[in-house]
Length: 85
Length: 85
DNA sequence: ATTGTAATTAGATATTTGGCTAAATGTCTA
DNA sequence: TAGACATTTAGCCAAATATCTAATTACAAT
Image 1: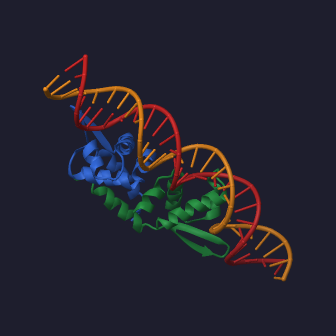
Image 2: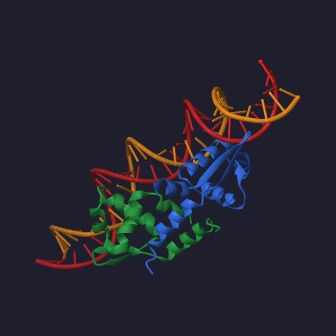
């Protein structure tokens, strides 16, 4: 879980996740939405992928990124332990 | 939400939160559970407090820490947007 | 084969973070 | 009020992180 929480700790990465809620996007499309160089975005993507928050799939020259929703349930479960209603 | 995710990104701080699930504890009691100096734990507590994840209450010489469960619901809501079931 | 496009990897640098010790603050009790 | 105890604040350092540019890899098309 550490890599997941570390991945979520950065605003750029959270924004990437929110973008992927609507559509699967290529690395290039994602980077267009930020004033950050492509290599930096690529690095963020690799952290998100390492945390299993996203999946990548190559299609020709492009690499498409999408959410891996399974891990989100783990986060919810972790946090729900604190609600102790 | 940024301070919340930043606060959750550190394993020591997550462990502190888990300890506080069972009991409200003083800063000293918390620090006894780690091989980390008291000032460092105090700093972690201040980050958690800044993120509104915990509440502190002085009782004489001691300062008791407890979970502020309201913010945990915000985290759950944020994460649940990604499940898009 | 060569060229162009998409993306990542490598290497450098600046900032942030997490840890420490020492000093300061707040509170209790004698 | 002095001394002891609990905790935080201040100041410093090392390690981790986020960013950049330049170089490399992967693929497509001519």
